[in-house]
Amino acid sequence: MTYPPIPLDRDMRGYHGAEPPVRWPNGAQLAVSIVVNIEEGAELSLAAGDASNEFIYEAVERVEGSRDLCMESHYTYGTRRGWGRIRKALSAHAVQATLNACGRALHHSPWIAAEAVADGHEVSSHGWRWERQVNMPEAEERQVIARAVSAITTAAGTPPVGWHTRSATSVNTRRLLLEHGGFLYDSNAYDDDTPYMASVAGREIVVLPYAFDTNDMRFQPGGGFVQADDFARYCMAAFDQLYAEGAHGPRMLSIGLHLRIIGRPARIGGLERLLEHMARHQGVWFATRRQIAEAWRTGMGLAPWVPRPALSIFEV
Image (cartoon, rainbow, N blue to C red; front, top):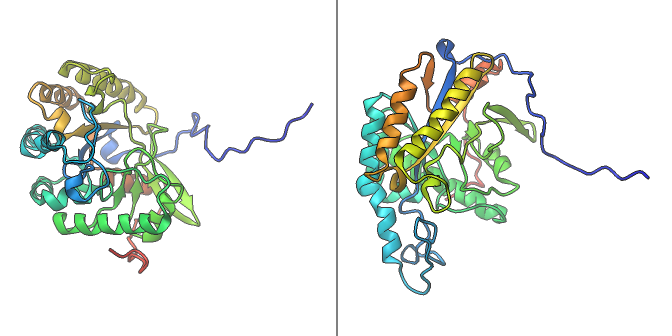
């Protein structure tokens, strides 16, 4: 008996040993991308006019019909204390990172963008609010992209060239980013340890896969991290493996951080130990995601990326 083919529009094979002939700048063996997520002030809140309150944190509790002052203060800890600790740790090792920032978060805390730019960090886009875009109507998603770009440009002085949606994109997200014209890369994938190119309607974008395992979000209940050393040891193991593989093909390691999570006093030491471990190795390139995306285009023999003016349909 024969069966009809099952359609599948995903690339399940990837490079499969046929590594692209890309070398990182200065012959680096591994590209390390530190991503600092800036979400505080962009989480759902009745006080901000949202339809509900945020409920995702270490203590999961829904408050309906009224402001959740407790949840708001959990997030505010990130800007009041967490950012300063993370900034100090990155500075101590001269690490350039990418701030994956929600537009509304930087609207409320523009000094974070100013300090990040002064330190040489990149400010990328994590959307307008900290929200999923799956099932979002196309016109609304265009407005979300435009509003995020406007807010980040105001706070950082330059528009973002990278995009990362919280958890779930729509089927239109990548196409809309390319139609907008101002995006070099997106991080809306979790399927590799090596960048790749994606094309939609004849336009190309660099995809820089992100990771949820080498991420401080695993300090949340059931995530597996309890002590600072849990985070450090796990991320060091990922680094060691990718560093070894990097001798034979291009690899990148993404480390995900959150102000309100790794910025706690009992956890920041895990980040410090991880940075110390990685810095002891030769040939490690601590890079922003923009730098990695630009290096990838160059390594693939593509022309330097030049942003196009945003289409008029992308209006705030």
